[in-house]
Length: 501
Image (cartoon, rainbow, N blue to C red):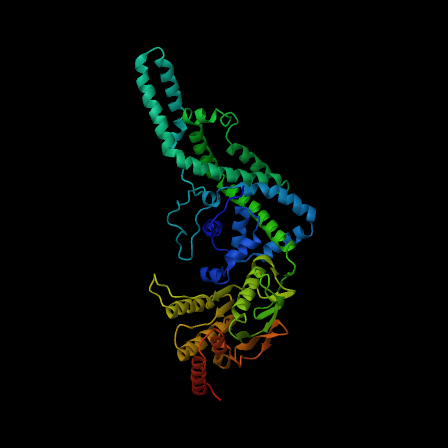
């Protein structure tokens, strides 16, 4: 049985492992580029171990360190099948293990990711020390059995027998939920160590096999009909709980290395399996910082999506096109492919040469009723975040759709021009907008590109949209002809007033 895990659990390893280089994908970019469904597609069939590692790679970028292993798996069908069989048991894990073996990493301000997590112990384990009294647990069942035996010969001994039975019951009730939760974690660790131990050439394989055995309960205590007595009378489950927590605490550093090895194997296998099922993809070449060359690039989540060519050398791009033609889809396609190249080393294209840069998006700013934030305030907040990111030492790619649509036309164009010029000076900007006058204002830093349909396929050509279709769509949506005509009259007047002839 394979257990579902929410994204918050999938993200746990990345949160705990901490920063790795610069330019991690931020939350809004993750949402705007629809990376959650994409990650599900890439990690289809992977365990929680592999999914956590894939999440971290997509969030942080890891192609340089992982693409070679994926290439080797793709070239070795038999080896990929063997690895698949070895990894199959990981999908039985019903719990994630990283919170038990990783200390919460500090963020840029020096505080832990979660104030609720325990502080690190001196040995680098997040688990608190096992209480000293746990080593005396054996006395309780011994005393109970002794008093129970004595009661057959001396009736007053029933009193301590009853008291001790209630203490045993209360102990089980007190620790029941903790024991159950920990048992799932121990089982997942055993699955992890089992895979590690089968990698004969991997460092620590022998120790992994040894620890796996120590984490297991004895055969006698788990025999049918014996478990209940062993737990409720002899406290075997509680003794096992404390013993395994002590073991995990003592070997936390090794368990972290073991986790990373196993999770990386599962992630590599998932990427190789994903690519083997794709009909169009290529290994991405790394270009210079202002170079984006994508030939017949497509979006992997759109079965009927059309491929497009995009070539940028040294400049950003202002993208225009009629309503509904696919400008937003194009931006998501480019953004996702740039991140796939950075994380996994490939693109969904016939050929790709792209920069190894962070990608940040601003595509779905909305009113926030619960926080009292208007659309324009939301856009301003995101623009401020992007400008702050642009000040980082590393350059970046900025994907922006319909900037500043929450205010009037003149202020929208003015603010957009100022922000986009700043961003273009610190990286590559791909921006789409219906405010085509922006193309003239940004001509020094942005190449104007027009999305249009030719011979039933979409193409990108130099230029700016000349004929809009917003009013045509108004008519096609069932509005009266008088409304359409009035709209066209107003549009003509405004165009003459706001734009040069």
